[in-house]
Image (cartoon, rainbow, N blue to C red; front, side, top):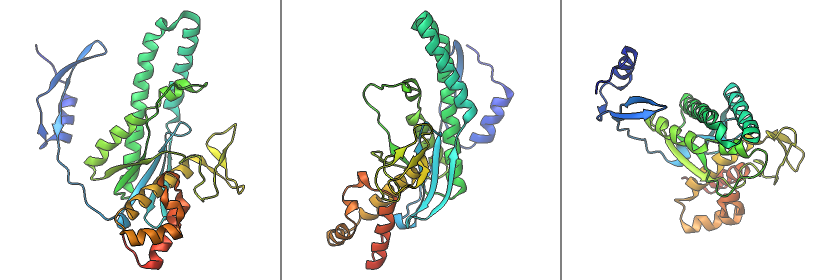
Length: 288
């Protein structure tokens, strides 16, 4: 069996993968066509840095915006922020899902096979774009680690946004980001996702989402803020709290627990706890 390759494909392989160890190409069938998949093995040495000297990119993946990213340092300084949102791609995907719902209601689920395939391809393209934008933003700001939430949704999803949640490619974005980040020399880490969006980053307690605009929330002290951005602060804070307290001896940990009780449970820590933790460490002359 002969396979004919385009000149542009060969130029792409020569330009981007020359000098990298190649594996034998595999033939695969996709969308009723046959393709050759070329695999390459590349070794990268990820730098080792202490937590106090790291700069991270904390990422909150959501449905309001594709991703809210914050560049943070160990003392709680937020150096840069960015909202990643491919509105055109999401609008196209939501319209396809609406058509699928209507066709299922009028003609049954067997009539939507082609539309589902198109929706899946749109979703995969959206995941690739989101992951590339996250890694690009982290690289531009010299981040050492990209921090995600550990998202493992189980059980039956209910409600009118059920179909959108089913199409939420949270794991796909993280998987693609992992490969891209490792090629750039950046590490990937994950933290507990429990109530990162439900707790205010300033430590004032639970937030209340706006009914009309879920991307905006109100803190208990009356402050209005972007809920995804607040969640990204909490994600970065939980990473630093874990990494800074992990090497501490028992005596220092007991003193820290007394002065910052919130660090006892990292699943409820917020950005304000990191700021207090850093102040106590400076006061006692501790270094990570």
